[in-house]
Structures are given as structure tokens and as C-alpha cells.
Image (tube, rainbow, N blue to C red):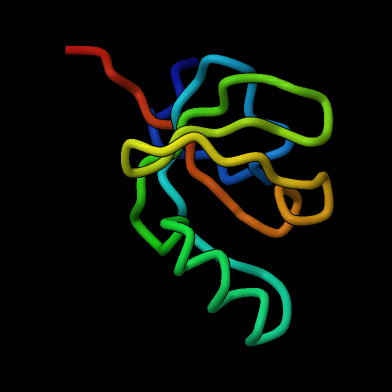
Length: 84
């Protein structure tokens, strides 16, 4: 049985290295949410997890940013399918 391409939400820390996800939710206090939005992790942003096991290196809006495990756990993404 096949799943729709956008059926699963998961924390950014669980996205496999090399994969891209679309930010769907930010969890945490208002200060944290505002700060990660300023860094480019706003809702609907595409984020590619480059690697790392904490800190996690991610590419967003043309920049590479390292995030702690706690921060990456609070950014909820939807895996992005590039299939044509």
C-alpha cells in the first residue's frame, strides 16, 4: 500500500541526512519560534539536512546553519518528495 508523498510529519532531527523537508510547525516558546523564523526556518521553508548528529547542519534559504538537537527537535517538517 502506497502512502501519499506528504503524509508524515517528523522533527528535523529525525529527517535523514541529505533529505529535504518543508517546515510545517515550530514548537517552543515565542522567543524560540521568532528566532528560528529569523534564521529562515519559517513555516513552509524548504530545509535540507546536510548531516550531523547534533549539532545538525542544515541548508535553508541558501545558508548553512548548525542547530542543536533541542532546536532541531522543535522544528517539525514534512519530508519533501522531488519525484516527477
